[in-house]
Image (cartoon, rainbow, N blue to C red):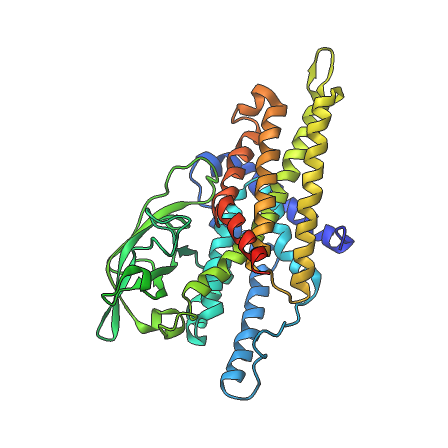
Length: 412
């Protein structure tokens, strides 16, 4: 795949029309008015039938898993690549991300964490009953989800410095701890809470467990949205747990076995999150380039449009190179998804590292090209520059991505 097909362009244009009609006019309200993004996202899902597709896909998967559980169908051999599907299906998942990020990248973060990370944590390691109980509502955005791993004292060292605990109490567990920088935290209906099993052993030796919590449970407190540099359309908050009592039915996989939702389950969601950053970056880069080209034509200095100056031309050319490179990473991801081939953690890290850096550099150059205007909130590039920066921080900092890539290379 080296360019968008006509069918994909039709999908893109339809989504772009929706974004320009429903999101662009509300950009200021989303940016400064603390307007939660969820109703707009639900309207997007309903408009393009994404909720119906999610229900259909979910139903087919659950029916297949039930047949396997009943012994009526053989599970796919471990490690076997399962065939993907039509590439337009994969594109349909990516194109809304790209188009929304042209105006409001934070909305994609809110959507991705809810229907992506939170639901994936349940769908990948949960029991059939848990999937039916929580995952479908997340996949359709009927409910808002949060994936809670980061703590005040644990950022990049999410597992090593984790202090949140689960302690057995008869047939139940008592959960304690706090989480911060949690996307959708203030409004989440369903929360995947990642913690360590406290058996009186040293923290470094404790098993990582994941539990599913519901809003309003006794002992669970969700903070108001935190103020931050960018991504204002993505509500971020803190969670506080004080002896939250849960049964084993809320333990993902209903087992304390590590693969059933522990470190490996969390790492799977990291790969998904990191690959999505490339699509977000492409949307930001594409919009910055569009705004800069128009500004270079319209802005007159020293008696001529600034686009006639070579230094401005160099900035535009570098932006276009970045756009092409990130777009090619997205194309590769679409081809792999359609073929049923998943990204390794190192591949996802490489994809995120390059894309996030490219988006940040392009957005900052867009501010520079706009001069004093670019520093004003009135101009869209100011927001995109603030929004882009977090792509180098969340889902693993640039430094963590480099570590994963290098370790993979050194193991070969």
